[in-house]
Image (cartoon, rainbow, N blue to C red; front, side, top):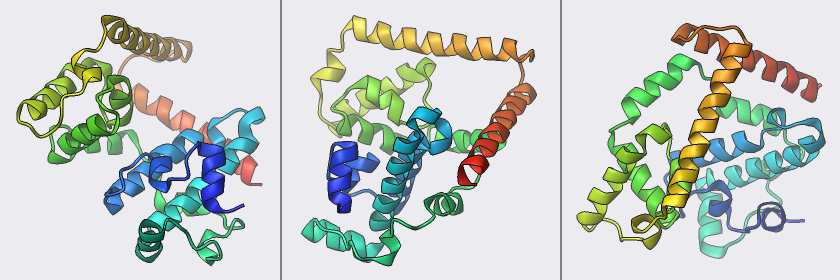
Length: 236
């Protein structure tokens, strides 16, 4: 079965850009970020044993999709003809996609996240990402909040202000889903955020940790080691 057929079967779309959640005009960096985000969601070491086989298949397909869209020649052919070079050695199903993924994306620390967040928030890149998410999801704040990097529920008003200002300036259209979002939907999003915060607090207490950045770092490192052990076992 060809790559496009696999994408249709597994992800519900034969559009490679849609599979990665990026627009057709996406830059190389946007394609890379899209691949990173989606592949993290289906990474084999993040699911239970009953879903492992399906996750591996999805992970492999995503690797092949990224290989096409990250290669200028293959992407040009796909954009023009809607086809991919199925016989390309770079698309081989036997390729070690886990090793390929690790080469692309190094492990990140809490300090890396904080440094990125500090430069990203308020930047032109963030503004562009928020406006693009608004366009892609037709003003649906649930999806916008999920898609945009580093935006927590407590910052929703900031994201809304950015969108509203862009709409007032005529940079983006006014979508009904945004302008007339129901209070029920807003409250549901708030409840989800509160539940996630409670789960995080519960985990912290179960681990017997005090609040603080050093303890948060310890939790992250501990989880990274656990995931690494699981992945090493999986690869073996």
